[in-house]
Image (cartoon, rainbow, N blue to C red; front, top):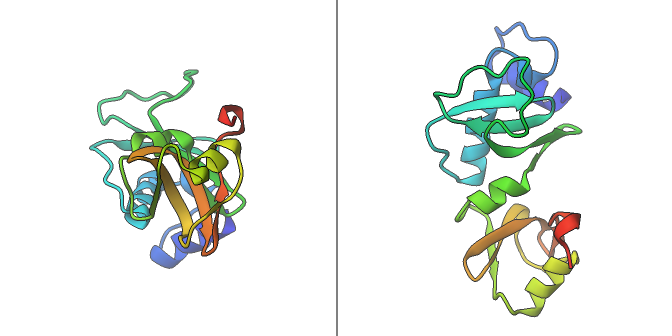
Length: 157
């Protein structure tokens, strides 16, 4: 969080912020725009909504959900964890492509390893959308040699 708050003060030095940066004066929308730009994705018209550490993208006409219990107020973009942003599996399934995409054949050994939960070879760095024959199925995080698997544990075979 401290990196997010520091970045907020670097971009807007006149802001008087306290608490979690994603809860301050509409910075949720700013974080979503930065995420979209960084990943090379285009979000539809809407507004950012945060619930705790999770960031969602909701339709503009959605009413205020304050004090209501909802499972998902929109498309889950990801979670802020330990001064970093981790994209959500729901975002991966919603996307067709992004700036950093790795595509494998559906019957390839790499895809079998990915679905199993193992690392797969890749020269990509950072968050990478993993696709099987053009269909997005999850995230991997590359270090330039391999993609570390971020496929949900409950879906692995």
